[in-house]
Length: 477
Image 1: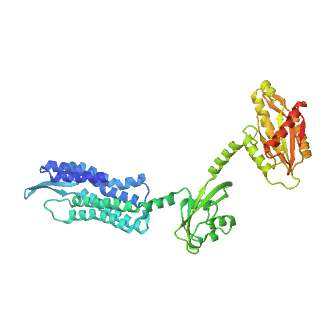
Image 2: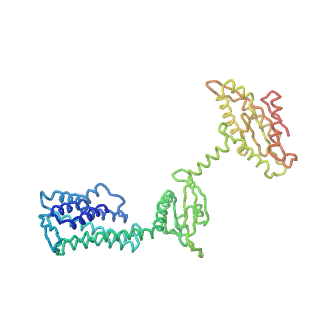
Image 3: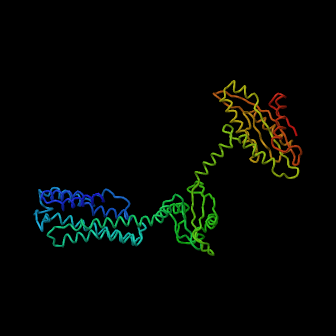
C-alpha cells in the first residue's frame, strides 16, 4: 500500500513541476500504476488488522482487485477509447500551467469503487472495535478511523470543488493520513505491546491455561485448556470448578488445590501425564484470590525420563538391574530397619564354563544364554526380591524374609530349572548350568555392616561350589 501511495505522490510532484502537456499526461499515467490499488489495499489492511479475515482467498482477491486492475488498463489504453479521460486541455493561470482533463465514464466507475473501499474500511474498523477484535483500544481505533476518513474528504473536494488549477486534494491529504497511521502504529502499538504479548502468550500457549476467579469460578481459558477438558468430556463454562468437576473427585481436588500438582488421566484409552502450575493473580483476600492454572502435558518427558532411568539402571542383555542399581537396592534393603528374627538371604550365581561357550559357539551364543538367564530369574523369583547382573556371567538375588534353609531350597530349585533349559543358536541347542553360593544373615547379626560384606560371604560359598565340580549349591551363614 505504501509503495502505491509513493508512486501516486511522486507522480503528482512531477506533474506540478512540469509545464509541457505531454509530460504532464505521462506523469498522470505514471500515477495510475499505484492510484487504483490504494483504496483496495487500505481495505485489505483493515480486514487483516482487525482480524476480520486471516488471509486472502483466491476468490476474494479476484473480487477485490478486478475493478482496480481494469481501471489501470483503461487508463493505460485511454488514447484508444477515451473512456477514462475524454479530452485534455492545457491552461495557464497567473503563470502556472495546469492540465485540465475532462472525466470520462470509467473515471467515475473508478472513483466510485475507491469511495466504496474507503467506506468499507471505515466500517471494518468500526465493527472491529465494537466486537473487540484484535484488542483495539478506543484511542487506537479513532486514530485509524480518522486516518481512513481523510482520503474520503480529499475525494469529495476533487469531485465538488471548482478549481481552475486542477489541484488534486487527495494527493495533498494523503501524506497527512500516512503520518496519522504512522503515529498510531508507533505510539499505540509500543504502548500496548506488553498487553498484546501477554494475550498472545495466553491464547497461543501449548499449555492449557485456566483463570479461576473468586469462588474458584472459571472466568477465562485458552484453546489448549478447552481441548484438554473436551477430551475428558467436560464442557467449560462460567461455573465454579467444583460444579464442572463434580463427577471426578480426584481431578476436582487437584484443581481446587493452590499448590503445584502432578496427575495422570486416561485420554482416548491412553494414560497421559500432566503438571499443573499455580500462579496467584493479585492479592490474597479471604477466598477472593484469582489463580492462573497452567496445565502442561509432560507425557513425552516422563517417557524419556523413564527410558533414561531404565538405560541407567538396567542391564541391556539380561533385562535385570545392572551392578550399580543392584548394589544400591540391596544396600537399601540391607540397611532398612528389620523386625525381630527377620532374615535376609543372598544368592550369588555364576554360569559354568561360560568362556568355553563363547570360544566354542561365539559371543552371540553367550549373549543368548545371558538373555535366557534373565528370563529364568524373572520368572523364578518374587517381585519383592532384588535381582541383578553384577558381572559378565555372574548374577545375584536378594531374598527378603528368607532363612538360610529357605534360600538353599530356592537356590536348588533354580539350579535344576537352569540345568533343564537350553538355548538355540544358529540351529544348535546349547545347554548350560549354574553354580550358586548362598549366604544369610539374621537381624542384629554382628560383624556385617554393609551389603558387600554379605556378598563376600556368598562369593566364598560360590568358590566352594566351583571347587566341588560346579552345577551345585553351597551355603554359608
